[in-house]
Image (cartoon, rainbow, N blue to C red; front, side, top):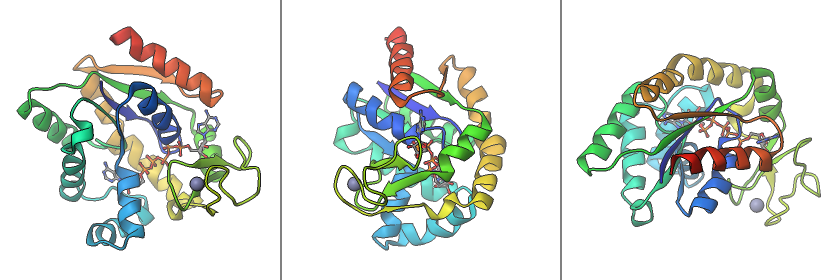
Length: 217
Ligand code: AP5
Ligand code: ZN
């Protein structure tokens, strides 16, 4: 399947993507994770992205689209993918459509995770991520690690993202409403949008998402 995951910052896209990609045997492609990996490796791409990310703004389209295309061209994405955080505005959605069209393929679904804003703020404020692997995600109250500051899975250090400060989160939410939400209408016109509530236990949300996707198959 070819799926786009959309939802506000902190909705649980990364958390759900890890389970869904595993269940569906498709790669999880997160542009946020790709940028963070480039930043920690000190690449030119990471250097370009960092100032935008720290300010809660979108990284320019030409940089983002080229990076996403490059990742989607890898062999493991040939038969499907789960895109998390891309596209994030209408011009990225148009670029993705063009790219898929040139290969004669289409998206199967756009899974829209709905969460009220106060819950999003709580989820982001308590999020802790592993330095070794960004898919090891914890929350100080909702899914606390057994030992404070230490990843249960690999023993790595847990840290709080630079862009998870209150001020930057406010900016990210504004960017989501003004630039990203319009892609939901864009895809609704193509009949692709499936909206589910992302409230409740992580496993319940995964179940809801799988049921919604199975109905489409
Ligand atoms: P990105 O990394 O994509 O961040 P985001 O969209 O803001 O999303 P988050 O990673 O903050 O949240 P999430 O929805 O994945 O939530 P999570 O699963 O961690 O992008 C970061 C930046 O990169 C952007 O601001 C931009 O600068 C740049 N960028 C990226 N893509 C771009 C693009 N296409 N174009 C331009 N720029 C781009 O969950 C959050 C917390 O909640 C965790 O602690 C988790 O444990 C907890 N949690 C999850 N589910 C539940 C649940 N059901 N119940 C309780 N707690 C839960
Ligand atoms: Zn870890």
